[in-house]
Length: 173
Picture 1 (cartoon, one colour):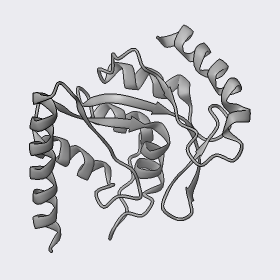
Picture 2: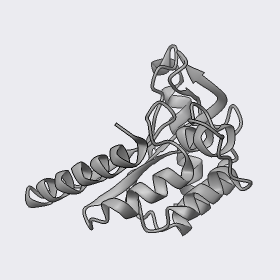
Picture 3: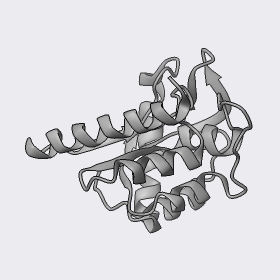
Picture 4: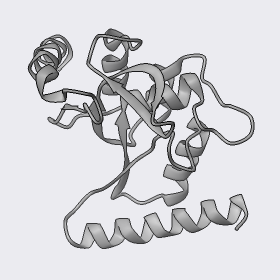
């Protein structure tokens, strides 16, 4: 199917799913990432507004946001990169961030598909800028989730990541 038809069909499905979830008291939160079809910042924003449902928002994964807005990983045709990177991307989603995954990025893909999730504070993201931007974009949930997906020996670095996150929460939370 062509791109425009596919985009509209996915938006319609997400809208219907958001309605079903709302009837059951469950929030529908969409995690965008470079491994998915609609991964350019403008596509993510367009999808959120095309779905246009009060029970639909995004999961803002800091690593995925980096790969989509700074690297332009796995984007079809011309890459779309934001000069303000993750910070700009979070502001573009003002009022539309329903959950967050906080993790660093080394600017690569895991197995060529999804973002490589690196331990917090070890790579490319400046969380002293990212966290305030996410909060200013309206994120107000009490959950700040660490996402060590696919990181080798994730259990061994979890405690260190929790301490790093606790410091961010003290500073910004």
